Image (cartoon, rainbow, N blue to C red; front, side, top):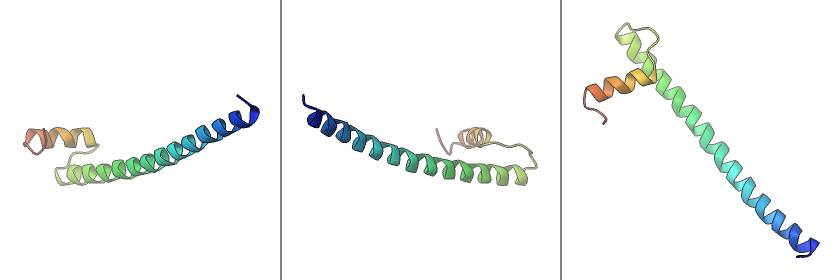
Amino acid sequence: MTDKDLSKEQMRVLRAAAKAIKDHDKLKAALRAHEARLSDVSRDYGNIYKIWGFRPEHLRQACVARGLIT
């Protein structure tokens, strides 16, 4: 393999890596936004039932207990 071929392969891999990193960053931002939304809903539920420190894990348990999710 010549230096030119190696350079082409390196650029091909770097382009693929750049796309994967950009996709990852978008997904990570979407996850952060969704986690913030879950925290807000958990806080609302906790406020309604006067339960302080209510977390998304607790909200999941409440939904499972009521048959809303499995």
